[in-house]
Length: 138
Image (cartoon, rainbow, N blue to C red; front, side, top):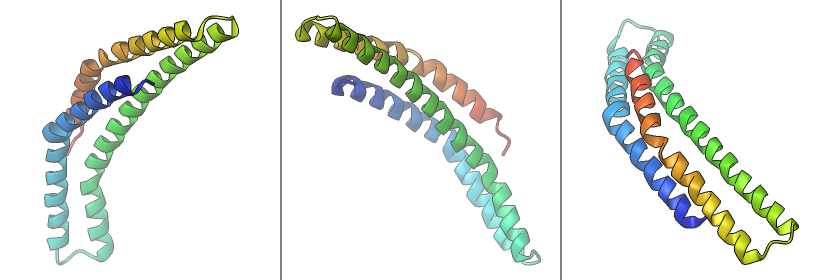
């Protein structure tokens, strides 16, 4: 993918992740640490009970992180498939005898369209992830 287009996507995704981290994940991290500290303060609990308690405290955060990772991977895969389609079209054009400059422009145009299309998905993806994160019980 062209460097400029890759940078556009990366900045948009980074911004989305920072927002999710500040508005959702950070609260879960704070809960996890407070909850885990409570587990450690139980002097009557066995080492195994403390460990299980800490694991229960960590579960919602792990679930949230897995959700964000899964959604980002799906987004990345879709974008990669789109750009691979552009590369295939460019290769086909070269094989058919098209001029290199024309094919390069066609490839850049196709990749830009992929990025534009996927950038427009980010707000919906963010909303969906926020809703999913909010539904995780802590």
